[in-house]
Length: 573
Image (cartoon, rainbow, N blue to C red):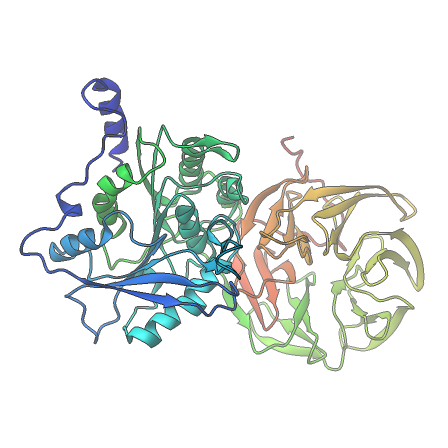
């Protein structure tokens, strides 16, 4: 239910009856007789490794209904106490519209001035709130909440479904950003006059929401048509873009637009109803894309309710995923110097000990080719694990083998790409900052090379003699906030010609013209370094993530470069 359309229509038809921005708090926002009042106490935290030198005040609200024997739901609100929140919590808890919630109202950090007479303090609000990084979420979860638990001895729930985060203006985008990065910690968001504009990259959110696999977040948006329109953007238009993106991606989202300015009048008047909506059906868990309705291109790849599943753990550097013709998947583990095999039934076994390898790829001869960076050589293994040296005097990272037997190898430390045919090697490219993952297009007419230290995946024409031509920075990747590199590493291809790239942000899925159309969420915080399609039908995506390997079933089907080329469909340009 979205009451906004009625609200907007009312203002349009009855504009003469009310002044613009004429919002008043309702009964649920005011003290009511006979309602138990929670206790609000202020505290200070002045030790932070995440935001060094900052000090800040925070206020803790504890309802009278709080039972220390039970983990309490939690609300975190930016910029201190907003929206008459203590009164609203008192009244809604008393009515049993929401559970007994403990609230933390947090002021932004300030670095005190060295001299109060001659210098100003450093105000951290925009730095902490407006950017898209995960630093503020880490501050809340790793510093503030442990401090609250230690100092106030409160029994706070650690279940993300029991946690809400809220704010207005820059505090609103801070709330959403925290939930975006840590849906494992926050799943309910109230955003008032949200600053999703070009101050520190907030205008990127609608694009990222449209492309990224949906996350389990429920969000209520509020804004007014007389909000700010300044150098960073138009707040009201930006909030509408957020709504459109969230709708597009299938989020559980509600909103209320009015005619207010950049203030808390409208948001305060609707906060009680927003709270009811955000906590409706509690404690039922909030799910990602709950109605399975999305327009995301990535939905043609991912299967509903099919997430990542653990395949192998207790590793120390999983990498080099590749599949043979049967769909069996192999990977290397740097620290143990082993090559492992994942059978079609999921059984894990050691294929080769003391391999010292990183990148792996099967060739048309059925052999497994491996890069041994430490020994500066490429080797091959037959079905029994017998090792043969293929090429020396290079530092291989990743490899790809074509149907014609050509083997291309990235040499990251030396910024080179090599062609190996038989036992002869030839330099075919030089100068990419950190050439890493490497794969063919399905028709094997193009070769793709990831630049770990850059933003692009390069594309080359493959000439008949194996030489490379017409190098272009073709695939444009998204970067994490504050990062100067994509960390593009492993590559794989599907039968439609879509390229899958492991990056710091997640697995970015690119169409043939080089545009990111989707971002698959990382299986764990330690991002994947390698991916490959495997399984009997090559419709299972495997991801190597440091100490673990994961898999998930997809609607896509991978291609093997050592098999005959296939021509993918012509893309929409």
